[in-house]
Length: 237
Ligand code: DC
Image: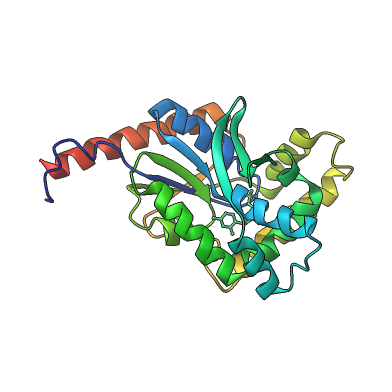
């Protein structure tokens, strides 16, 4: 039993982690919508830093230069017509951060300790008022270990590559096979890095979405969210 908050805490935080292309952002966005919560795409933050650093001609291997650069950036996430838009120093870079160049370099930037410190602090602030659905790689394990609901969302690498392939169409200029290899490579880097690697957090529920329509995954998570909220309310009485 904990302190009674006069209904102030009638919201929970939901952490959704998993490998690339598992459908985290689509699912997290819809869960947020279903519950009236705020969706926060933390991958977009690492992507924004990567895009900006590449634009500035920096070497992603140069940890110091990347960290100094990141510290100067003003990254904001805002609601947009098709979900969330990403603003960098006021400029809309939502589409730019999904480029193949960013895909190929973002894991290296995400392995930068100082960049992670900076972004994790921002993420914790964003979630401090509760009522957020946050997706990423280390949300349940590191950013919000106290999140009331933690999901580890995955799918087979073939299905994840196919989803990304369909999303980007011919625009990416890479074949399905290449995309599959690149996704595997990115997963390997995200899972093997020294700082906050991708893992199934303690207490996280494993959800394999291979062959399951997104709507079904969304309703399962939203339902779990409602249950956890009911439990949280019980706890404060
Ligand atoms: O989810 P995404 O593909 O947009 O993530 C981009 C990269 O950022 C991915 O390679 C892993 C990294 N990332 C991370 O290390 N920690 C997070 N919380 C979110 C993303």
